[in-house]
Length: 210
Image (tube, rainbow, N blue to C red):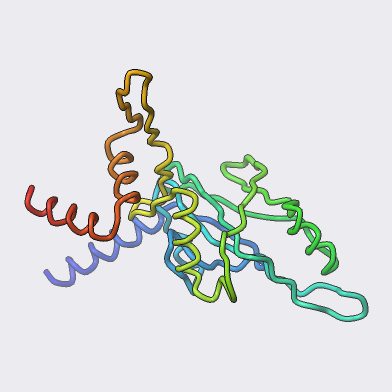
């Protein structure tokens, strides 16, 4: 009986992995983080969930610079991947650079030629630079991601990334307040606007409601 259960669990695990969405990156692209969590392996990109996934990447390649070779490393970039369904396969690519200066010029001007292929269709994408300030701003990549997302109004959840600015607050001439967007997005919006003490009080209140 134990063996049977073990086999069933193993088959279930393999099936769930097989039907997960995936993102393939070229050898010249480092995978840094997924949904705010630093990563040291690309394996997690083979089991993506449906929804918007925030992938942090970086171009890194040794290129010709005059008579020598130099390693060019771009700043971390944010790729928002909208996974439609399980078993979807995505592939990211970029221009081929022959020299250090060519890569430097391309990334400085957001012209790295990124393309994302899905279901045989290739589209041009523009990963944005991860916002960060100060000395060695990317030494703590998770901290840099939190700062970037706070500035952009993005909240990371177990299901992926959500832009809380999609919940718009408007006030009419008569003073009536209207909030658009679904209830979950509205809650995320107000939570991000609250102070540390207000968030704590809100969490206590939520527990009391159960």
